[in-house]
Image (cartoon, rainbow, N blue to C red; front, side, top):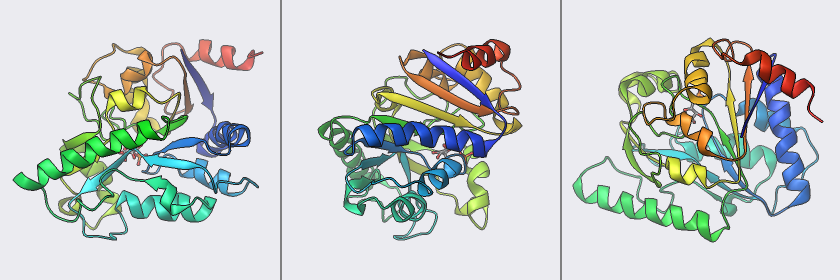
Amino acid sequence: MTEVVIVEDAEVAGRLAADMIEHLVRRNPCAVLGLATGSTPLTTYRSLAQRDLDFSRVRAFALDEYVGLEPGHPQSYRAVIDREVVATLGLDPAMVRVPGDDGVLDAALDGPLEAALEAAADRYERAIETAGGIDLQILGIGANGHIGFNEPGSSLASPTRVKALTRQTREDNARFFASVDEVPRHCITQGLGTILRARHLVLLAFGDRKADAVAAAIEGAVSSSTPGSVVQLHPRVTAIVDEAAASRLRFADYYREAWASKP
Ligand SMILES: O=P(O)(O)OC[C@H]1O[C@](O)(CO)[C@@H](O)[C@@H]1O
């Protein structure tokens, strides 16, 4: 079931998502977290950083990573996760994995490298399984409905794999680079099937640019045209959205009442 929580802004949403993570980590100090990057999860990470919580035994897996950035690039998701999550929450860097972090990302994509990347993607999938699966996966959503970097057309059962990024996603993420031409064209991303195996999905979305994607993902047809719609197949989803991102939800009043009267 998808529980939709409509809040006034990203700060309140971040606190609520952080409450869920705090609850999990207090119950299980060895919990396995799924980490998202981009702007959306930042209020959650900042709220967690203000709490007195021990993350030293928590393991974490990032959703995705660019292919083709030079090692240590500040916008690689490894660098973002190290800066925004590992350093601020006190995770053990050795317990935090990013797709392809076993040494295959340091070149542009070409024939032989693609096979190496696919092998790295398989290893990542197995590493998640070996860790016992992800307890709580944080998700943002792209304006085109992507989750992770699963662009429209992704198989709903897809595993971790190499994907080409759409022009829209590269333009959306150009704000982190000097120009859109510097945004990589490829990535390794957890698949939609991988994401569905996490035990709890916490989907966050803010701003009216996300309103169509949120409505399509939560209330539209389950379809690879809106990869985020795969959350409807998951038994435990909490979607935390601000008023602007909720503005095209048909059943917003129902979600508000259900949340306000939650036992
Ligand atoms: O949070 P943003 O920056 O709007 O990005 C949306 C989503 O797209 C991605 O950047 C692609 O993975 C995610 O990290 C994020 O959840």
